[in-house]
Length: 358
Image 1: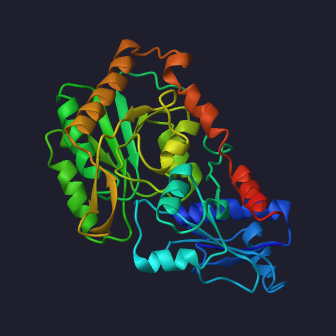
Image 2: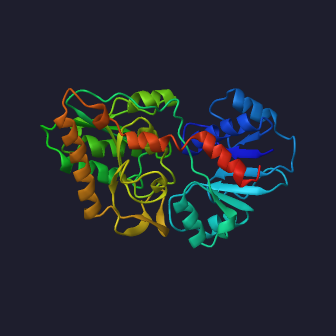
Image 3: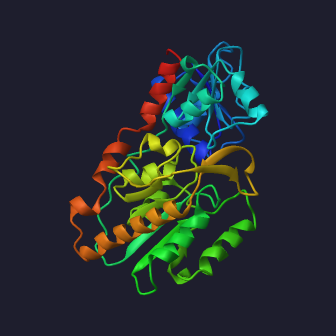
């Protein structure tokens, strides 16, 4: 019924690709998987998808990949590109690749709007397919009943992720005597020695002794075991293509702080998240991944920093008020749990099949 192209690994595209295909093949056992690069792991779903390859070249083909390379596809059937992107504009190469697709899937309304504003496709050829979270793994964890507030960030070291501003605001929000910690699980396989530069920025800061670095975890269960031990996820990203970790933290019932901009506004709102409102955009430039030639992202200016500082202080203040006895209604983000339960990988797969008319 469908040919599906995506990486299968522990990074963003790979996590989404695996979970979506796993649900597609449950619904349509004849679905074929064409991995982009060698899969990091295999299971019965992947093995079955690989065995189904070559059955029909007239099937629709969905390719979940970077926006500059969604045009190459399997077979002669309808071709659907599923790019996940963070900026407001595209290079000519990216525009050409996406325009060659018959249909595009976008994981958020924000992304669909960007595609329309850039005249990539007419609105009727762009379908919103939200990504998901595995709520069997990421489930509400009991509140932490001690007097320490642990903040957590999970995402590759990047300026885009706001890691430069996070350490600045953490140091501004608290004093050495405050019982707080900041856990960072941010190793980036694409930047080599720059990982150490980022860690040194944190270690050498005023509150460097309150920073804990956590290596990348092997399984989603391992990630959950970290998330359940913290109080609040803090994600001051300048732009996101989705933000899987933020949704996973919500599913765990944890407080979250995030910028009110880009794709994660699909599931973040004032009821389930401490929002950092954005009042201006700026050219996307970091000297590594983004050159500033095209596209904008959120400006983490003084106003945004002030909000981030205030939100972290608020979370810590609530924790201090309930030392050693955190009531369930206070200690868990039930609005976040409710939201996360709507964004399942099964629903993602069904939206894809619906977009294909299957």
